[in-house]
Length: 438
Image 1 (cartoon, rainbow, N blue to C red):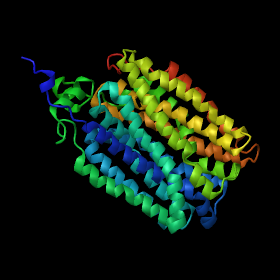
Image 2: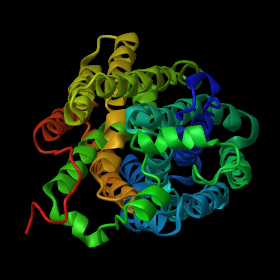
Image 3: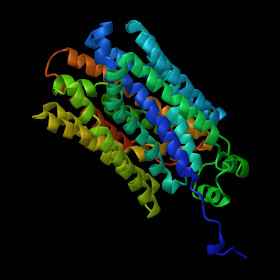
């Protein structure tokens, strides 16, 4: 006889604690990578390098971050996020703190490369955790929550690092921000397990996750016998390549805010260091709310019966088109208008995030392909991170029209990205029997 609803144990909500935990890790990662952009003027004065070299320095993190996306995702699928995640955070925390020891341009480049290696598995681990801990109808919002860490970290890095530079100098700022990850590692090792093994979850929550499409490895590999697709076979599909291309376009927008954004406000719009600290966080803080709204919209569409592909593409396409307003900041009549256009752009690209980060779990053929496919997708974002800062640096270096051409370039990339998500990405599980490329 079925147990009455009133007598069933109340479902625990441990999954929300888990997603907050990975959001905190994401925030720490973005503080560590954005520290350099805030401190770069002071470093440039002390170490002595040109704007062109500054662009290369700001881009260098993404060289190894992009390169190690592919092995990083594979390693997460191979060993699981419980082990790989804390090792990655420990690695990148050391790379951040060690930047305080540099004596020249080459040293900065070297430790940024170390930082890139450490942060490479993060996004894949986040996606794997969400795919295991959340049913399909909550996945986009959960993804938007952990990605909120990127906006929060980017926004917090401006006032935090500004304050740290004032108190302990730019070298000390790297030591302090690098130490944040060590605390997180201890908390992660204490708390994190898979849903069936986590001591605080009850069976009601585990059933809710698994019956709603949560991709726990124990269920899909144990009960159904579904085996992961070989890693190299992921590249047989046009959807895989479209995920890379779309994320490359988005990466140009996102990493403008991580690299050249403080320079634009200070050197183009005339912000003082104090004004940068007070107002520079506005786009990132507003984007946090937009990120949640985009994830809620996608999940709401799923719950009301909208096809999964349409529920993901609506926020994706609308968000990427809206992000093109970044181009208007280059011709804004005053600093307030410029900051307004930048905020609108950042909010628009954030609206797309929850749906975008859900895509690997939506199309992966097995739970043990989710992190690998996320790593492949995130490789595209890092291509944008490599290309964007260098192109913008050299366009600025020409001395013509200041930021007009750089921001027109960024706006054009957002429109191209919208077209890719609208027409090239197929949101359905990859089928080993129907590869779309030969």
